[in-house]
Amino acid sequence: MAELKKGLLVMDVDSTLINQEGIDILGEIAGVGEQVASITSRAMNGELNFEAALRERVGLLKGLPATVFDEVAKQISFTTGAVELIAKLKFAGWSVGVVSGGFHETVDRLAQQANIDFVKANRLEIIDGQLSGQVVGEIVTKDVKLAKLKAWSKQLALPLSQTVAVGDGANDLLMIQAAGIGIAFDAKPVVQSQAPYVIDERNLLQVLKIIETNDHFIA
Image 1 (cartoon, rainbow, N blue to C red):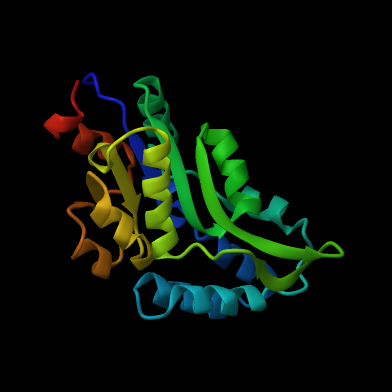
Image 2 (cartoon, rainbow, N blue to C red):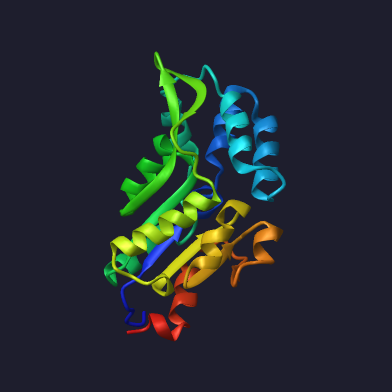
């Protein structure tokens, strides 16, 4: 591995850091799997407004017990190379963040397991131990993902040129286009067509190869 300057990696979670779409798993458990998955697919392709699509899907989850996230965790797996990529970059002095249209109830566990520094996700409202069908607070839209990339790089005193953004859906496009290296990872066609870099293989170590071919990241 080449000696790298310090940098910031920001990744999407669902279908990027992990192999699954967490909200689709919740939909399956709630008995509305096909309906939720269809909305997810259209939203990721940029066919639907993300915030409206998220609120619609969360509404379908009303009544699920809060303990459902233990079951979701059992069905989630890190993408090949994810944990190794993070470990290698952290060893090189990098920071790693995730921005997710999914939920803190799932993403926080993943961040702890993978030693991720920054986390931004949506939060589900839970009343009397059940999902209410509502989201609490700010929805993580494409604008919020971009804002987090900028805020975390500023916090680390890094220029945007020293950042890498990786994602697969339309919600990731703004941060992908703003980062020093923006990568469409096993992405929807709308993302592949507009991203500076494209990885088709589901192996996140390919991200490291791209970083190491960019001179301004090499110490």
